[in-house]
Length: 116
Length: 113
Image (cartoon, rainbow over all chains, first blue to last red):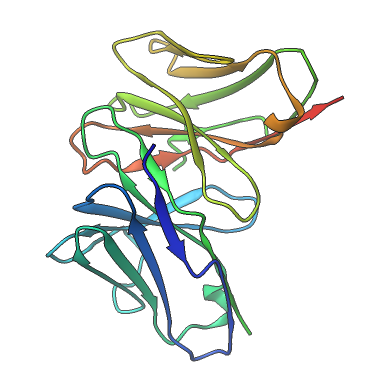
């Protein structure tokens, strides 16, 4: 099955630091990838759709300048949390695939971000 | 506005019995539905899906039922095994909307010995 790799799995850093999270599709090309965020005991909320070679599409309420997305190749999308603050602490998950008719998205293992 | 709802936050089932997880949705434009299983600190793992043109899809121990008129779907796991203990999310998608998934809030399944 499709494999999506996400790195790092956990980040702990000081307030004000920028953090980059990578999402790779390992055995298929992904023109579209998705970034989700999950707060404790809540559902996964879509943050943005990452499009290879073009600008990302952000969901309502998600700050574009805060969450920078780059999708420079067909197998890699990155999410950078700029000047992170404690309220940005969360579980970030990427997914890829699912762009064909009735095809499921496959998810990475997520990144636990903790801002001190 | 929660378009996909899982009203049971938790469910406990004895090993060997059937687990039934329920999901309701409000958006009639959804035409593809998926179930994912999630362990703590991991990403969701795809389990099974169903298109709106069907009312049932089966894969091994997992069966998903779709009732479009009631905007309701359910996941049946039989027989339940301890390794099935996890959080289960249902998700819905509308074809042609850049494949955006809308997730439910999840149901934590505990399979006891």
